[in-house]
Image (cartoon, rainbow, N blue to C red; front, side, top):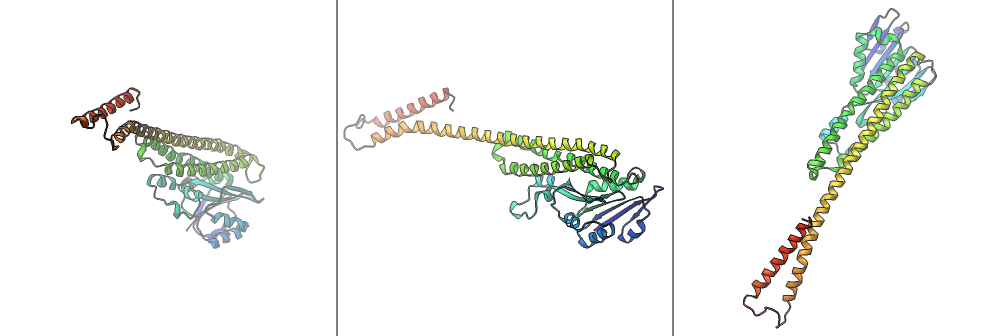
Length: 338
């Protein structure tokens, strides 16, 4: 559990606290950012009582697989944003996760949840584990308070969401590299290709695409809806994030299409291998069938048969069978069946 409280005053003087005991001292602050990493409901309840936050938002903040959402409570906005975590790359490379052992959703597998309370004076971020791209914003606030937190909570929320979408888009590259590896295996060594890897990744990309589309809807609302919390000038910046969100969705659509192409290529190679096998079996059957007929005829118990009492009869029949086999193989070879 960790608590980081940043308060900036009229003279751009930044003060940093690490305890909720300082909350009564923040009344004169111009902008407040409280970042909380915790799973404690009691801690969030204390913060909610101080700032007048709805109790149901606390449950949503601690629900690790909650879908992205935006709710307007009048005096503040409540958002749930999901950023891409490092878990997908580990899952794709190592492939150690057992499907039967899963007791959580795909949203929790591949993304990290961040709950955001946004008002005209404060912004509160809540998460249950460390988020690397959020730490980057915290460092920027410590280094450049006049260019970050001093600009207001809406500017800070824009920076958090902007970096989150950017890291989301860059993190998708791991899927692109893995799909390229799948294509190489399908072409070079299709016998060792596992189709369930493609199915797993398709499910992952589909879940990420749904999340990206939901978050784009949130960004559109932030950039278009009338709100006292988001200034008119700041809405233009959120529209810029929307362009990046559209690019992210298009990239995910492309990855899903590429994955579909890998699956089709695998099935095509499988059909070719199956066709080769069936052709070879058909050739073997075609060659053996007349030989079986001839051997079956000479296996009948009749006294009168051609070459039956000839001392060289066995060799004549054996030579005939070999010659027939050779002629049929030559014929199949010329027809490119072998």
